[in-house]
Length: 114
Length: 114
Image (cartoon, rainbow over all chains, first blue to last red; front, side):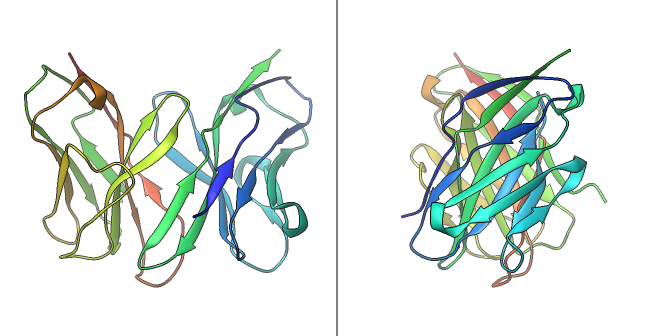
């Protein structure tokens, strides 16, 4: 069965600093990979996804992620963080098998300080 | 386009009471899902409906039942609520059967069972 690990439960960065959120997955084949963001009291919104092709994926709000097969990783990056980026971020892996099964990581809560 | 809508937004129940959480999507999606979100555990799949007329258990189905009323609506029922079912419940939907795409989430229902 597939699994997702987000090793950092909580990260604090200064506004304007760069950001990298880590995500590792476990799956025998190439999975479908997602990053979602959840603002307090809200549902999840898709930031970006990787299905195939170019391993560097651009998303909304200036985020990007890079799929590294050799490291089973799909880390999320942003060059300069804004205060509005404070939220919880979820990495997810999808596999096919009768239905679109998506497994979510436990999330990384991002705090942005002035 | 409202996307995925959920009712109610908040609910407080006493142990043993029953209730139904409603979910509807207007994107003509085939598949619909119910997740629960608990601190430190990410999102866990309760039930899913791969297409109209079908439902199947997910990772944590005990204590819940579902109904796919039609293509738009997918409800989640708690027959006899327990404090362990205190959680935030999210409904999600995704597009064409057999074609991978991201899941679209509703705003969530915050349920407290006393």
